[in-house]
Length: 313
Ligand SMILES: C[S@@+](CC[C@H](N)C(=O)[O-])C[C@H]1O[C@@H](n2cnc3c(N)ncnc32)[C@H](O)[C@@H]1O
Image 1 (cartoon, rainbow, N blue to C red):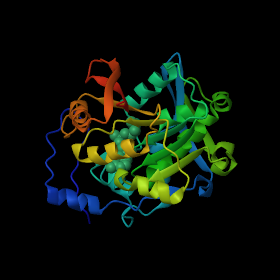
Image 2: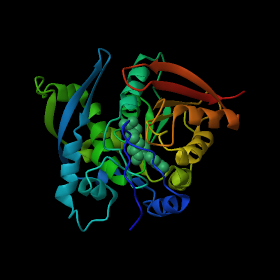
Image 3: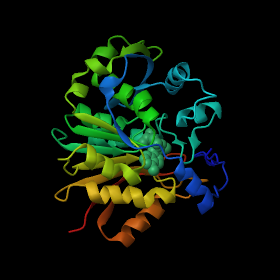
């Protein structure tokens, strides 16, 4: 069994202090990376909720407890050594290197959606990659505007339990809004991946696994893969140990002409090793991308930003 320590992206927690030996053990538990075929998934009954972020942005998303419930109904938790069973049996949102919070929708993900919805940009026929997508609302937004979107997350279960259901909910937003209980802002429905044209047309693809192995899996699965117009990522800067592999994917897969990355993140992740400043320092040392802060959300809690990485000329 792999070593793990609990941490939460929570201001009350103390420093996480994994040694390199311990981290090696964490990494040895990495699941095998792969492409996931959504058309192999059965129809899923789900509970969804309405997120009203602003007048320009209303989205549907699967409720986290519903995703966990589906998982529990399908496996014997005690006997199952899957990543998600550990988070359910141990009632935690994050287990380093095992399950890193992908079922939840984190604040910056909604910031990024709002930012994209206000952008004067034609998403049609663009290719987009969302790294560490989790509930994937930013990538789904681009898909609804006509982009081809590749969704990538560490956990296969996150992709099947949250990413794909959220995508189907929002592709069918107009139709589902007629069925929603507006008082509760909630909805019970069935999503059927095999019936969705957008999934059949392969305008979206799904990959699980670590960023360190993503590019090789992508290239072996798709021989003619081209670089992406836009790479998105939200709330993925909380641990420094991931920065090099995240940056390598960005450098190797962002289109050279006019391609860019958008990062949504908090200024600080208390109790974790990462912060926007730490990542900015890496980008400045690396001298490959420009770092441009496009928007700051200065709420009561910690500051949140949208940052653009573009190629240095
Ligand atoms: C805090 S969650 C954020 C999820 C989502 N982007 C959001 O903002 O709601 C971090 C996400 O990054 C993914 N992740 C973390 N480390 C990763 C790695 N090394 N490779 C691939 N995905 C990773 C996790 O699985 C998780 O979904």
